Length: 234
Length: 234
Image (cartoon, rainbow over all chains, first blue to last red; front, side, top):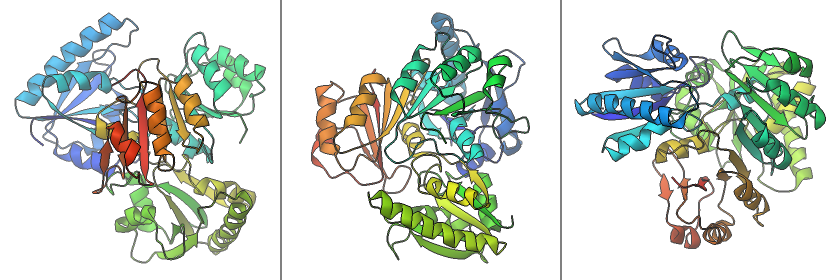
């Protein structure tokens, strides 16, 4: 595993919901990136991976600020890509751990094209998504038969969520923490107040299952939350 | 793990893309269901699980015919639910293995409400979906930033696929084997002929990556195929 970047999906939170492939790579890897939102803040994806990382592995803390300014983000992606390139070019294997699956709203995927452009070998290991874990925890299907499934991030004005609720049988709303009150009212308006399940910190010791619309209306929703809405009910 | 049904997502095909949790359960389970489309045909989900199943486990072959007649299907689900209930009520733990994730178009999820109705304890272990594995193999995101993702099964008349391609930034088309030619023409008509990737038997030794629209137009597509269309390109 020399001179290569490996993106690893570490799953939704339970350290057992990581793949055997991820574990085998983490055991042998030279360097593991700990992607932090702020310097020193640590990373949940890194915490999940920790038990599997080999003793001789180096940890590389990289800061990826959570801002909405695209220029600022691109700047930070480029500067982190520089650091990763340097390590990879010294012949080391580098793991970039991401919560859930790397292909679903992850920072890692902004780095990948930059690395490929620079001639770096990239490999990606898929992971279990939060929405699959939420469905499993609730023992419900995300989608069956000829039904459709829409996956959208919650935006302040609900535009995207509304479109998905118009068009799709089942809808996953990612990160509904900001705008959860407005979302609750939208669900009531559509008669969907008993057709949703939202789980915060799914599969962890702090897991919280919310199916009561009043709770959604009134309580603060943690950042790591995922909602499934089933328009035809459960 | 006495007297309980556990649905287990075994991932997309590579036996290493199964979770540690699934492996630990399969080691200790009393009975493993091998869900077959035809008696004696075997099951790919079972093949993936096999290396991890404890030596003393019993194998229970259950036939789930692949037909489109809903009455016939319901009949087979009920009769299989009867058999599972009997085993669970004898105090045994029963694993129902499913390809990919149990919440995404799986037969297991038709059995779950029947078991819950009968008072059987049900637990579901999520798995890595085929579409996450396709994205990982291609090193591309399924969805980023404020983009949306639609997941649809391919129907003969393309109605659902077309609606998804109208409305969503990224579209996963599940099981495009029947109707792949029509789908190819639809992609060309929309100028999306170089904005898709389809992988058959993803993550296995027989994996086949198709990005050439001519191949999609002319060649037979295997049943276990998944397509990602990115309307904004790669």
